[in-house]
Image (cartoon, rainbow over all chains, first blue to last red; front, side, top):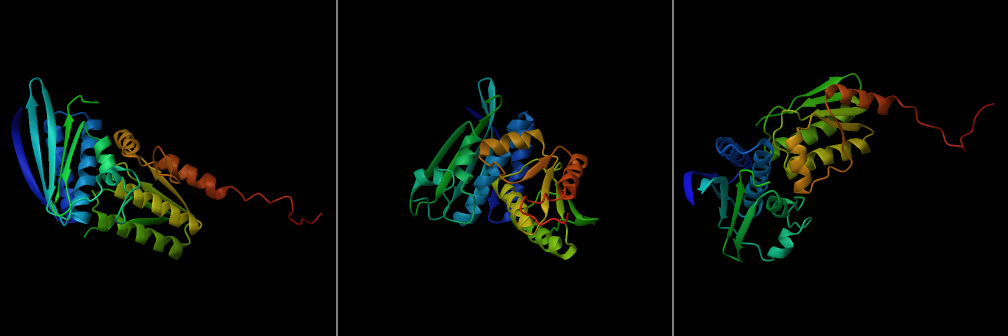
Length: 137
Length: 131
C-alpha cells in the first residue's frame, strides 16, 4: 500500500472541526469518491474530530490518500493524548455518552466507514483510524 | 463568529443556512430562533438546508431540538432541501430526526406550514354549542 499524499491538522476547537471537514472533502474529491462516499467520510470525520475536542482535550487529524493495487482510498487518523476510553464496548453503543452529545459519534463513524480501528486505554489517549475505499459501498 | 440571519415573513420565520456551521454557530441559531418565535409570535419556522453538504449528529440534534422547542412555543418547524447524499448518510449515522417535518424545497415547505397553521382546530364532541 502506498500513501500518495498526506496532510495533518490540529483539532482543538469547533472551528478546527469545520477545517477537518473541508480538508477531508478536498481529499475525497481528489480521490474521485462518489458524492455519497464523500458525504459519509466527511460526516464520520466530523464526529471523530468533535469527540477529540469534547473528550480528548483536542488532538490531530491526518488524512492519507491510499493506493493499493487498483483501488484507491482515504485513510483518516485521529490522535489525542486525552484520558482514553475506559469502556470501549459501551462507547461504541448508540446512545452512550458521557457528555452532552447524542452518543452517535463512535458507532456512527464506524458505520460510515469501510474500515475502523481504535486503540485506547485509560491514560493512554485514543487513536481512531478509518478508511473509506472508492467504490467500497 | 458568524450568525445565521433569520427573516420574518408574516407569521413565519425563514432561515437559509448558507455556511458550514461550527457547533457554537449552530447553538446560537437554535437560541436565536427560539427567542424570535416568542418575540414575533411566529406560528411556523422554515429552515432551508439545501446548501449544507454535511449534517452530522450535532447539527441534526440542533434541528431536532429547535423543532421540539418551537412546538412547545406553538410553532411548527419544517426542514427543507436536504441533499440526497446527506439523507442517506444521516440514516446510516443512526439519526432519524424524530419530530422534524421535512419538505422537498422552500415552496413545498411553505405550503406545508400554511396547511398546518391554517387548519382549524376541530372541536370535540363535548363542546357546548349554541343551537
